[in-house]
Image (cartoon, rainbow, N blue to C red):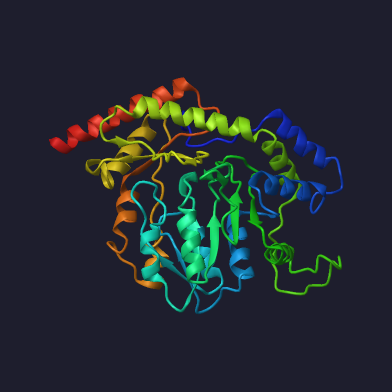
Length: 380
């Protein structure tokens, strides 16, 4: 058992009450809360349409399908992300084409995208990794120049902003996700964001078994669909959490800044990159260790921290070196050297809204000791 966990949802009494109120009704699915939650997210993000679904992964899948991307097509994306941002492309028989990342933001390196564009390329799927906004201005220019769709995976970036504009509002469509470690949670859940009425209507229909939502005929299905609906209890929780979104984001920023202050003088630890023109909503707190703590040494530090009751993790393993991607596409080490290097050096520390300063001090104190011990062992 960990004394300090990696993440923890912030569930208030008002959240519990909101969910229980739904359970007193007969509308546990496709009720008023579903529509209210969609509107709340759309208004917050500044887009015309939001479609609530049961996960960010489902949302990405529906976007790929709504854009008509399929077998023989290619989608340019990043190898440094949670695996669903590439898997959603495979779901439709298309091929993810990876582009290496920048070493500071960990986001896709826009300067390397055009060399990967072919006559098979249909879209760019960029990720706001760790709630760090991607370079949307350049991404939009490239997409427009080459007549490509632009998809925004903002699963980790609710509340982040790029040059004053909210993440989730840049591409032809994008997603947020609401797993319990995210800024807000619905348990499981996600939402599709778009200003395109056709994309929104297609996604809403496909998320509800391909039904014609205008006719309202429950047993009539006009297209292939899925059961990707988000239930009323989850939507009620999301609405309640969104009422506290400013408070939640302030809490997360406070924890992040405390970490920054307490870690800045520790040798071997590089703090998260913060752009002066962008806003980060702090999905996780991930530091980059110096080269002498990379790979197995980093993993040993994670194990030593666990022995001390502190849950840390590597964030992320590169997608192209996942076992089945190696099998399918014959990727090997060295294909995307920057992503691979970052993957060996990143360390996610415990991070959540109500993490106390004394617990942050405990984490920092023990990390410092583990780094020192590892350095001593390396020099023996």
